[in-house]
Length: 102
Image 1: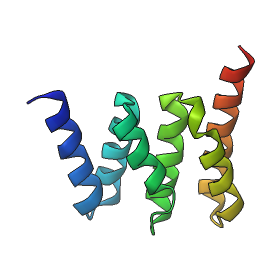
Image 2 (image 1 turned 45 degrees about the vertical axis):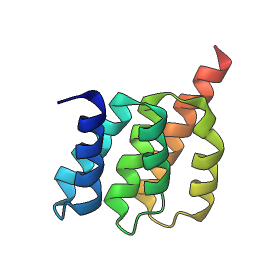
Image 3 (image 1 turned 180 degrees about the vertical axis):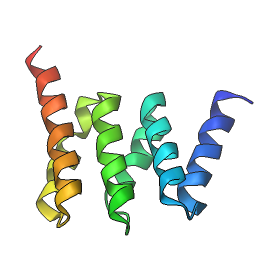
């Protein structure tokens, strides 16, 4: 399986998987890969209907260490109502701010 085929598979899992823990694992894997395509998918998941997926996307964006997503995370934090997701967004923002300071 090629790198792109793996990413395609993970994206399909995120889009179609009904079990939250499996979808969250796929989201984390996308953050670990960290390509621009993966980052764009993760950004789109910040507005997912399920809070678990939004939280996983926020965590994964912090893990991916792409400072360009900082404005997206801040914007998502302003809109987010779920406390768990807010915490994940705040943690990701802090991780990325720390990178800017280096």
